Image: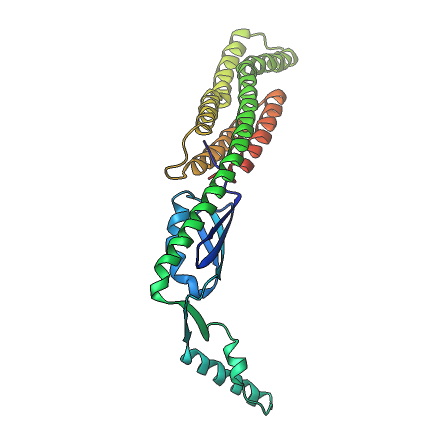
Length: 301
């Protein structure tokens, strides 16, 4: 079953010491991209969270948000980045001098700057905390995956509907395309007959031979049998892919995107060869359906 790349998941874990909340939001993206929003003191968990999410999600941009509440007296280690604090002080003093301000940054101001002081869980506490964070991440990922799967079913139904419409249009093209050489021969014969009548030439064998040659050349240029065959093949592949398992590598969306591009290319080729208003109208209808397919495919993992 195909999956959407859009969804939301929430995972919550309460232990004796911590209350952990992980939220995941995913949207369309060509690759697998993550943005983490959580206290820097828990950055040690980021890589494990990333691996946990990637076990289920293969494509999409994922926003990861986490909050951790300490429910006990578990100790945290406060780390001070002295080098960074000195740089802040130097820059502020330089700015004060440039602006003729007689002031000096106080300790209260400096400690409020990002990363100057960071509360980190003690290493003895990190293992248990990481285990709880991973559990919350797994819960959020499961919920997100369920939502993406549910949305994927809706997308699959719509794709199958569009594919069925497109298949009917392609089937309607075939008989019209077959009639085009005969219609061309009829129009060409009429034009040549008028010319012969005006010039007084009565050698009909010459005109018939010329007509046959012209019709053969035209029929070869206007033939769209190969394009129609490829369109039918691409439509069948799309239908089959909507029923395939996308849990291994998340490549179904990429395959569908490629097929949508190929559908558009074949339709354009038929349009360039079309010498019939009816066939041109069908090409326009086909391209409208293909565009809807391309739009939906962009959201498939």
